[in-house]
Image (cartoon, rainbow, N blue to C red):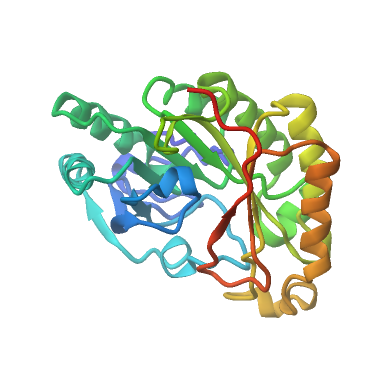
Length: 297
């Protein structure tokens, strides 16, 4: 951490000495909240909830971020590795199905020792890496064998859009390389008899207004380069918040037909595994089960 290069920005700042980089994150992990979360995709939340840890700060600056209070404004509490380990074990004791690390990239250096310590103390439920998808392959390789389930966004298929709305240069190249690495590590989604995820990849696709996300192009990439059996979470929950109202093209929200076009494209491309959401979008929409093929055990 004397020269931080965890995310694609590779700021090179000395976080160990307290110098923040682009993400503004300190050396210690910062946690906004943790809980048994029941609003994730069905195989993640299951019946008892996902043991979700929301980390503060972010490597991106999405103008429409729904979690801006802690992702952009940095609200939360610093926790040492020992406390992070305890949080994981407490969530397991609450009977959560998994440990769900939300926006973890910039704290990987704290998460790895916390996970190893937790496993030494009896953590035996799957670990979910829940990410914007703006990742370095080198960082992901450090997580091989520690993460069971990858849950990345594939937010854009056009770098110009990624820069304009998320200040994320070269997002497409980093994102696609990262998702390929994730799939190489954990493969397609596998569940137990209870339908709860044990291992594998689920890709989140947030449809944005006026095809800003370029989701259909991303779907083609997934079919051709990842797996036609990939499980997808097609999300309609965009709504204008944070700085989105400063952008006319984002201010009106997502049109029903725009979302329908993405869902129809999945069917045409025979990407039949996953979940869709209802319209109109709300931040707490429930996922609708549309699985056609059950994940293999």
